[in-house]
Length: 320
Image 1 (cartoon, helix red, strand yellow):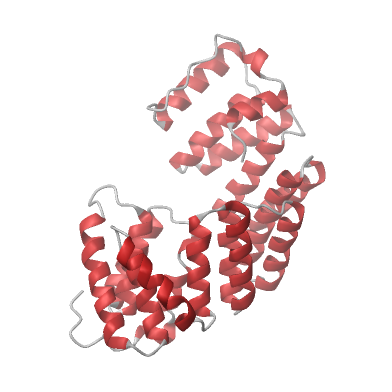
Image 2 (image 1 turned 180 degrees about the horizontal axis):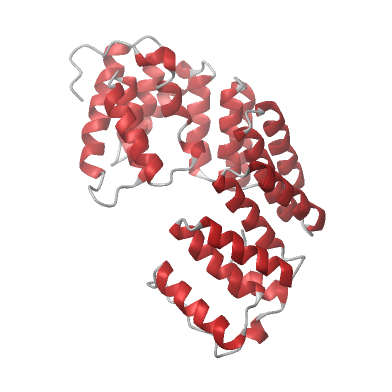
């Protein structure tokens, strides 16, 4: 989604807000921002941009009904307010109102002016289809989004990669992550390609590169996890268990007790699941979900906690 400044510029509202508009500082919390925006609208009237900005704050607070109300008002004031329509579709998706999300995204698709705008609506539709359990249709819609805007973004690659993983399209997943890395230079996509290669049965091919990363990196837990998965795939269970124990020891030190990094929580959950510590893994899964984790980040952990794995015996000597 575009920045609020670009939204205002695209709608021609910069002059309308004028120099009297409230100065937004990064340290203001959502409640303060809502109060400031509400005060502004009470004084000078609502505009699509102000309603949009307040909706983003309501969304941050989890007040999705209030976000919907503001966005609907914004769109009433400006029927071709693309960013407002996109955010409304996203909020409907977060509410689980999948039909409304798809209907809103289709409406946005009709008025999108650029490939990037059209692709963003197609990705909302793909995620709604995924939630409906229509994985093939969701993947087709993801691919259509990349056709509209080939560069995509990292989140879109994650979503498509998760669908490919669920459908067993491992070779396709490897190739798409490779193209994404070439197009964006994102190390996230490079690392996801390594994960995909392990799933594709190419652990022996990628293991030397993982070894290099384990040796080179100061913070090793994510690469220890990858090496453990590769070693499990190659039948080296004892060495894999050692890697997982080391990863958990590092993650225990890095996860902040009050403000944890959700990616670290997910990684520890995966390490625990691979060691057979189902209760610990479920605890981390629930914590990650409470922190608002993106579903695309959870596919390896959810796979490790699939019903057929729940009764798996812990690795001998595991205490993590």
